[in-house]
Each structure stands twice: as structure tokens, then as C-alpha cells.
Length: 405
Image 1: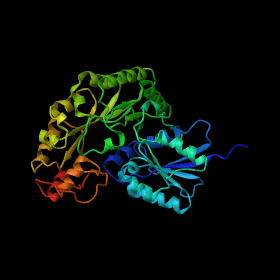
Image 2 (image 1 turned 180 degrees about the vertical axis):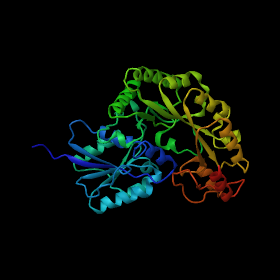
Image 3 (image 1 turned 90 degrees about the horizontal axis):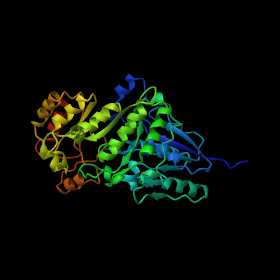
Image 4 (image 1 turned 90 degrees about the vertical axis):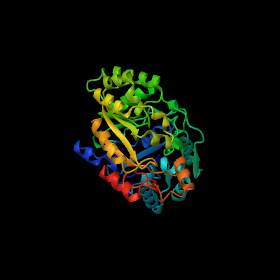
């Protein structure tokens, strides 16, 4: 008889109610939640060949966690906005005597807190540390803390294993083509997780993930990196390959992504995106006031015409999902009316209007803390609250103006 396999219960926590869960859109098409967790699916794919591991899976956005399931280990991931639920899940399993491995964005940004609530903590990217942990576990000597000191070569990241999910539960699948951002915006903590060096998977790698998603039942794929438009040559090559592949299948996939507002000025890229069947671009416009961009180290976008960019995207048949922020130091009571007129003038069909916050570990947080302008913590939601004490209006006026807009 073979060795009894290690049973690992992978858990994706329930999303707290917030704008980004897009619950009404999800319900309208009969799905249960937005997209499956690619981190856990990638983790499963990192298991060394021949190792006796059996994975169980629960996305709490789709079904209820079975806290009494028979398993040797629970693996939990999550973002900052999942912090409360992560603590509850870890405590519930540990109370039953089941050890917990915790990784992801929350564990990476708050390692000290993570170490207090989990038995094994993974800081940073886990493609290399997870196989090491599995080897340590099977030899009887797992460590409490695993740290990926350097950012990995993405060509070594395996395609996510989608065998545990049902496509009908999700609005779209996620494919990640790159990690890293060359920009250093003051309010963004993404570079603490993925770094500033832009790294990409190979085109064949990405197309294998596209085919896997298609075979698993995907109808729409979301490219989950923060900015789809960093290396233009790479973007063009990928789009050309997506067009070739989409023309070869009976039912083409549609795609969506996030990108800098600069993408709206590139006619060739927009034409290729339209031909590749992109339906939505989440566009980081942020603000139409150049002085607001400069105050948070986003001055590189000040030369872009936010009116022309949005309308160019619409003209190519792609929906511009416009991201706007209020609450900059250079914002005042006139900001809300200006943004309303901008949305109307550009015929923006869909917008996310958030309130500027300062996540811990960011340049903005440190600067405002030194000025005594941080009040409370950041919950990861970006809507209807902030931990920043505003300058040109009261907090009440800022939040009321945001809600009005």
C-alpha cells in the first residue's frame, strides 16, 4: 500500500460586502461570485510531482466552509479586506486541532499579525516556498515562517489548476501575465508585494493558461495584473496571439484588464484589443486635476488627455470602466462637480469613485503620519471612508461629496 496522502483544505475567505464584489452584476448572469482564486489554484499546481498530496477546496463566496472536514492542514489566503474573516477561519480550525498555513497579501503586508494566528506563514510569492514547505512537512520538520526574499522569475510559475472549481459559479476567470510596476505612486502598496521590476510570463505560458481556462468553461478572462500596458512590445505580441487563437475556436473568449490611462492614446493597441475581443478596460484616470496627480507621484500621467483617452476606448467598442479618486490635498468642494461634468462629457458608462486612503507601509502613509493627518486604519475597501484627515474640506464634506457624486 502507498503512503497515505497529505490532505490539505484550501480556503478562500468570503469577501466582505464592497463595491468590487459587483454582486448585482454577478447575480444578473446567474453566477455566485466574481472570479476564482488564482493564488490557491497556482499553489496546488506547485506541488512536486510524485508527492502524495490531496487537495480539498472551498471558496467561501460559493459554498459554506466545512470546519469539520477531515484534513491534515488548512491553507488560507486573502487580502487586507479579508483580515477579520481570516482571523476567524484560522481560529476555528486551530481550535479543532488542525494546523493552519497562511499566505497571500495580508500575510505579506502584516507578517507579525499573521504569525500570531497561523502555524505556518508565507511571506511574499509562494511558488518556491510552498514546495519547500511540503517537503519539510512530509519529513516532519515544517517551519513556522517561510519568506521569499527575492521576486521570482515568472517563467517558473505553473499554470493554475482549475480542477476544483465549477465555471458557472464565476463571472470570469483570472489569468496573470505579469507582476511588478515601474511606477511608485505614493498611495499604492502593490510594489511591496510584486516589486517595481516588471516581470512577464512567456507568451506560450500565457496561452496555455488561456486554453486551460477555456477548457474549464470560461467565457470571459480577466488579466489580473495591476497594469496591462507597461511593456508595449510585449502587449502587442500578446494581443496578436490572442487574436490568432480566438479566431481558431468555435466560441471566442472575451477579455478584460486594468491599465493606465495612457492606453487610450495608443490607436494600434486599442485596435488590437478590439480585434482580440476585449470588452472592458478598468482605466486608472484617478483625477482630472494635474496638481492632484503630482502630489502623489503620478505626474507621469499629467500629460495624458483624460477626455480623449476615455472617448478613444469607447470609439473602439470597448467599455471604459473609469477609476476616479477624491480626497487629494488639491481637491476642494468644486472637485465633485468637475468630475460629474467629466463623466458626462466623456459619456463614461461605468465609474468607480473612491476616497483616497493611505495604506500602511506606503509613502503617503508615512508622509501624512509625520504631519499628524492619519486617523485610524485602512480597511482595504476604498469606498465611503478614509484614514486621511483632509486639508481643504472637512471629513464630513469630503464623504458627503463623494456619496453625492
